[in-house]
Length: 125
Image (cartoon, rainbow, N blue to C red; front, top):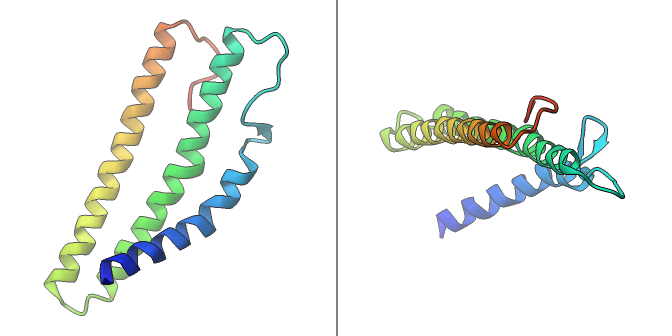
């Protein structure tokens, strides 16, 4: 029951913090999905670039920051309990691994798009 309560609290905080970013879905003032009538390959690649950038900057980094804060809170309030310290270290480690996976995924997609001939803005940043 305690784990379910923690998951519900996490989801509530996640929705409160992330939903405003998702509802606007803008990247640097431009809409996430570019409007075009005669869409070309470049427009499709711009869409992929906007989505990747939005996911990295608008979702991954804030979620990682929330997880770091949660792990820090668990560490500070552990009161010397080795179990809570272990949980906090595990959250720190998993968050770092998640960030590494996100950046590695971005690198793979960037490489594939470069091979396919996308020569636009630097993909993802």
